[in-house]
Image (cartoon, rainbow, N blue to C red; front, side, top):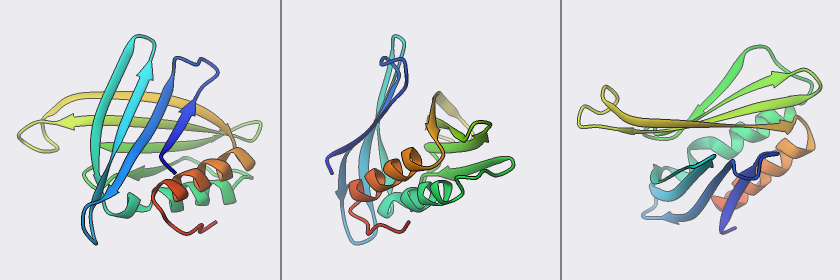
Length: 142
């Protein structure tokens, strides 16, 4: 799959994962673009086979009846994170946060941007997990 695109009820709010390439047997990279209102942030993320993002999303889909608190995922270098919270009515709030660090890695944040999407806890989360799994060329785990 060439890309994964999430959008909200407001079509100006999107998250796009694109261009995944495996650089060697252990590491690769992909592009991320976040758009919200009049803001667009585009950047590259280093990864080790998706850093378990697909498995994380499959886990959320499997727990469609809900959970307490927030579940979190982070990329290899913590420059892309995802926080998931279960909401009433069988929905999951996904908060994606991207950040760029300065010279003192993890101490000096140059910028960060977050965007939120709400998805149905069952099939919509399962569809997203499948898309991400395909994007990284992983077997379906859910």
